[in-house]
Image 1 (tube, rainbow, N blue to C red):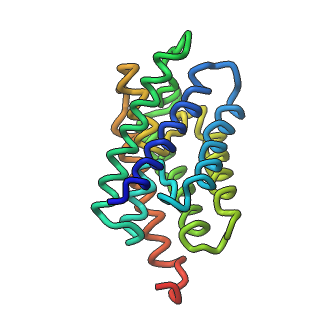
Image 2: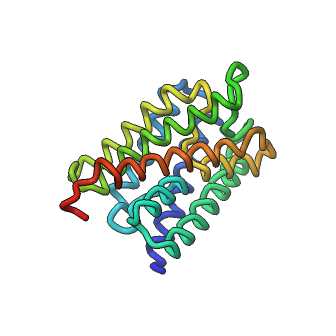
Length: 215
């Protein structure tokens, strides 16, 4: 297993929680600022580390790529370990450094959103994200614009889903703040939803959208 890959995934996931969840926890900006914080981290690290690890920084993305045969199982396990560790330590750092960390940007459902609605929202939004990853970065069709397309997809997902589920789309984004804040409300749906969405995107790609000449 390549140590550089694991380091890249750890740092990228740490940054996503420290900057993304941190922006939400600080509470000085609105929805647009939170969406920008998450998406800019993704764009920046895709261009910084994409050539090293692929910049998954999301266990659901890694699962989708595993289902599609784009990553080996042992590599996926390593990615999952460092992604969750990066998410937890990112939340620990926020809790230690913010003067008023609040709920640490924990992913929770809005009061008017049911568990079933939240689950479906997380499935759909994660599907959109992983679908973009497959059809830009994995396919190679978007060239150097893949990172921008992925970041913009995450941004529009957060703009829509943020007020409803806080738009996790990422089990590592959920787990870190949940552990440090001690708030595990409906946490299972933030694992199941993104994983189901990623699997659906992978199946669509390999079954329908993938250029068979690449196989």
